[in-house]
Length: 126
Image (cartoon, rainbow, N blue to C red):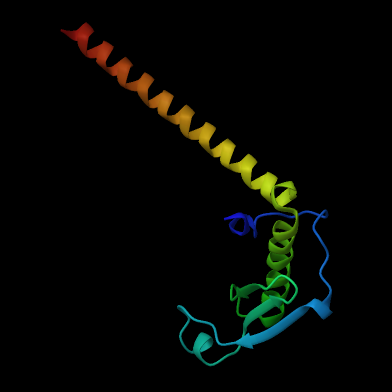
């Protein structure tokens, strides 16, 4: 559950990765895209050997962009793996969840006020 927070943070406090710790493969991607997807090996599978964390990235058609994105996501996941709840990624995810819940609560309250107002208008008309 902690690792699901990765992919959302741009921070400089993340743990560093060295190329020696990584295994990289290029495989065929899946999903929509037709021939561009089915005939090219532009999907990057990146594994962090010490922790065993694997990231698969096929967000663009460019291998270089996918390599960069995969490294960013893997770095965030490794940071979460080692730091846990002390990680900046985890803290930001919690803050965003709290903000989202507050927004939902305000929307519900606004809707309730609207309903009450309409009921009051209908009572006044009668």
